[in-house]
Structures are given as C-alpha cells and as structure tokens.
Image 1: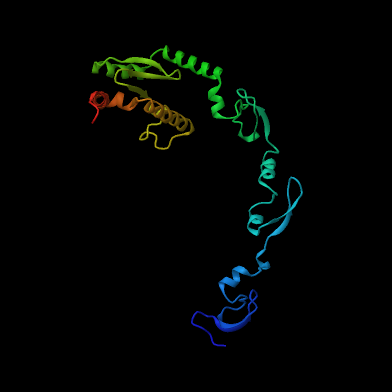
Image 2 (image 1 turned 135 degrees about the vertical axis):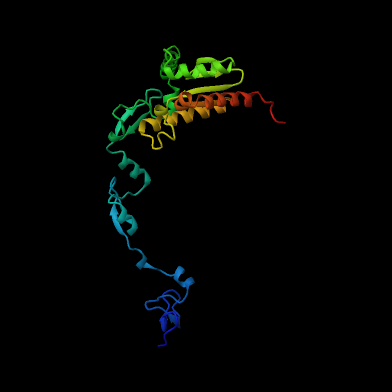
Length: 258
C-alpha cells in the first residue's frame, strides 16, 4: 500500500452503509466510503452511554457518557428532576397570596421566608405601611453632623429646598428642590461605599450601593435629577460640593433643547 502525504494509505473497504467496495486513501479503521454514507449508516458504536434508572420512578433511561461523568443522579423527565431537587426543601405558605413554596434549609438567611416572591413582598399592604412609618420616623429624626454640613452648603447657595422629604411614600431624601425636580443626598463615605476610599466594598456596603442605584433609577424614571454629595467632599472639598450643587441647579433651569 502507498502512503499518502497526510499519513493515509491506499485501502480497500466495503462501505458499512452502501455496501460498495471502495479503494482510496483513508485512515485505518474507516468504515464508510463518504461523509454522506457515514451520516446515513447505522452507528451502534456511538452509543457510549449506559442505561440508568430514574431516581424518582425507577424507569430505565439511556444516559449519555458525558452526563454520567457530570452527575450520579439521572431522571426520565425534567418534572422528575425538579421533584428530586425539591425533596429536602422546606415548605412555606406565602403571607400575601397563600401559595405554597419551597426553600432550601441552607438558603433561609437565618430567617423564616415570608413571601414566595419579591412582587408578593412588595404588594403586602402591611409591609408597605411599615416602610412608610420607618421613613416618617427617619424624616423627623435628629439631624446628624453630615446632614448639618450638607444643609449649610445648600443654605449658602440660597435656592429654596425642603429637608428630609418623604417621596412616593417609600423614600426619605435628605433634601429636594421640588420646583427644579432635584434630589440631593448626603452620603457617608463608609456607609455608601465611596469608590476611591473603599475600592473593594464589603457585603454591607455592596447592599447599600445596590439600594442607592435602585433608588436613583426610580427617581430618574420619575423625572428627577439625583445629586449625591460624598461626606469627604462636604467636609474637605466644600468648594467642589458647592459647585456641584450650583451646576446641577443651573442645568435644571436651562430651557429644553428644541
């Protein structure tokens, strides 16, 4: 037999699909004369998997070799796979809609789940009333040092504003220029995760940063501009903080572009 450039030799085989005798350069072990025959012929050797019983009902199913390497549990349907996943989960009744839902014991965050979903949680009237009461209490609380320094900056500018304003029944903002639709927040560097002073926020800071982004998006969608003044700027870069407020007010008073 003559060896080809790519290492294949002249071989004669009987095609396993069409049965014709074919002589051409091909690798050792070739069983088909062409790609078309390969695709149309029977290939029992391709089934390298095994038959395994379903973990839920015991029905024997064929499992591919790649799946056997990844898992030790096999199922005859997605429904039985989901049932197996729920086997060790605790059952709860949603306080708002009454639907029975499940949670893994390791995912309770040390508290008993009350709602089946975030929409159900937010739709609970009693929870909304509690949030409103919390914001009202925050609105009348004693002004802290950071807020006092922030209000001093706003007083210097001279534009009328409202301090500690409850918005939309859910957010208490530090200050608002109602006519200009500008919200001003005084953010503590640590508590709100200043990106320069705290480049790697901890879990508490990350949660607060997510809340801040969510609130900003809510106000923006409602047509407000949100200006956040960092504690370090209010205390150490007062001029810069004043300029930020003035620039925001100036931008809000400009006529809309045609």
